[in-house]
Image 1 (spheres, rainbow, N blue to C red):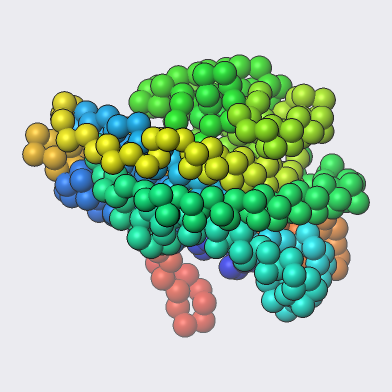
Image 2 (cartoon, rainbow, N blue to C red):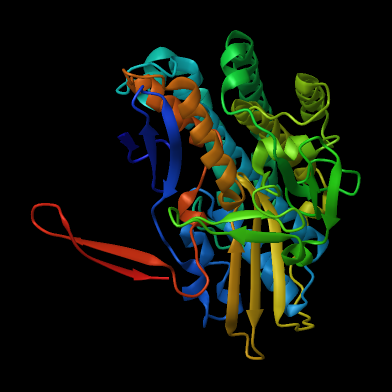
Length: 473
């Protein structure tokens, strides 16, 4: 049997590898995605004080620090019983929309874009953002400016683009000035125009590559995410909703009750756990999150341009859940459009300039859960503290973790579809990587453990033979 290893997987955040086992005839027996980094943030957050958490977990990742910053603040709100004033929630959501815009824009144009615009079989040395500049410099500049718009929203509120200092238990530490509000608003129209260009690109690409889309990791699953009371797209507040692979409702529950519905499965070949719906068990209860999951859940979007795009998106599968992995890219741009429209709506809300931004009154509970929709999916922070505010237990279920089964299944599916021996080309292997990139994983965020992490250490002789194996279960 032949084994092919792809390491590292490129154009993602974090470290992963893929192993593909080939049969004698060159076809694929099985392919695995291995998440081979271990961060352990949960354990070394224990013993810290709860009010430090809006600054500690964001260090997990420089790509989506805002998501961890805000989820941590929401968990701290619940732990102390400090409900933020409405203006503070508006400002937090505004920062969150900036994070969504910069992350989605960067992923579509700069990480996934080289595959879509240059082709899966393009030479690796040009299949990157440098190749995009050479092919379409005007579009590349627009893409960079779109990301910059989102980053400037974050910086305006939090003082810097990465690891902002803004949300605190009970609210935020800075009001928005009229000049800052007007500066943000001045960039909205350009951001919408660039996103609509991206939507035009993905729609044209989908028409021209329909055959690939229909065979590229298409499989059923459940779908999970936050929802508005009217089952609309929601990225910051709301209950958690879960639907089946056919679109029928399974559950809708408050975020604090997540452990009654979600459990995590462990496999020995990955540090990343596999969440699933408890009532159905593993793997029957697996689900997907993120842009594709959220649009499959949503029955409407409360902004006009994005809602029209959702209407067109729903036509792909006659209103039923869209199962095609490559449509994550389409869904991602619809969400970016919603986030930009939401920036405008938030900035035009009279309360956005209010200085009533902090509630200092406490009703301490010692336990809090904070949930929002990070760019990659549902992000859960769960903290338990003693009477002095020292954390006794921290549990994180990070967006990419929810999609672990889906990414592994996508890798196996794409490998079996495209790798037909005996000759294996670089383009074939790139398609396997693209199956992971479609989910835009943040593997630094998602690897964690409760208690001791199982580990195996193989000690080899100089000739490569196995001398001893040490293990901890």
